[in-house]
Length: 278
Ligand code: PAF
Image 1 (spheres, helix red, strand yellow):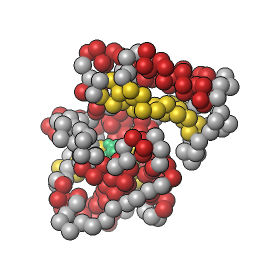
Image 2 (cartoon, rainbow, N blue to C red):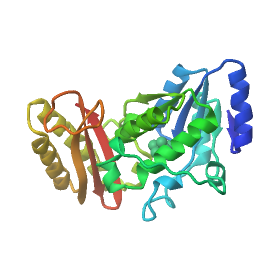
Image 3 (cartoon, helix red, strand yellow):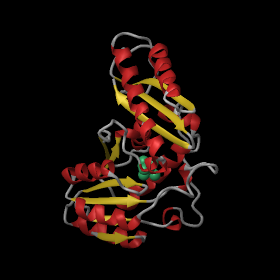
Image 4 (tube, rainbow, N blue to C red):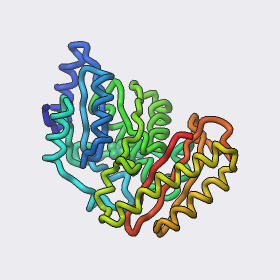
């Protein structure tokens, strides 16, 4: 696997592949890779003969009070995992490569960027849209692969790709879970042993909401019950449990068509998110 940190070197590599007619699949990550990320790499390998993974902890998607400075990192471990997964190229740029001096563009989004994560982390989706657009261009990606664990992010990335006519496809991979149901996430590294056990309640609460919705409960009832279960399980704050349409992220008061039930809650200082198809 080649490891590249420089934009010009990356361009030479991608132009070489393109001149051979080889398509490029991109897996954008912030590193500290787990099996969920490796499932994205495996899907990317099915989609194109060349796979680039990026590791970049993107400052524009963190608010000043958030965990940018302590976001977990293990580049040597990540490199070993990507080698074993058959990734062709790791692009691990520094901040000045992604946002060179004089960089002047920002992205403001409505639609799927509004509500839920967009309310609780107002910085997040403009930063995600910006970095993804930039990484798609730098990597000359034909397809990019994202995990469904960040469902709202997937909706945002699809929207920005459509709105800006970006010449690539967006693919997704279902959430990979631990045997007890907890969605794999780099931020699970922040949990202590007790928190790790309590954390399974998030998936269980979303399963409960999904079952109640399927049985005909209103979104207010089903999500309200799930929130109560989270508090009983020791979550100190529930940011939301909500139902959205799968198609366009619009709100539904009941399960009228395929949807997604999403939740975000705090265990101590650790904020966890998850979602399920319903
Ligand atoms: O999901 C993530 O890890 C990040 O939001 C992404 C898509 C790599 C953009 O920084």
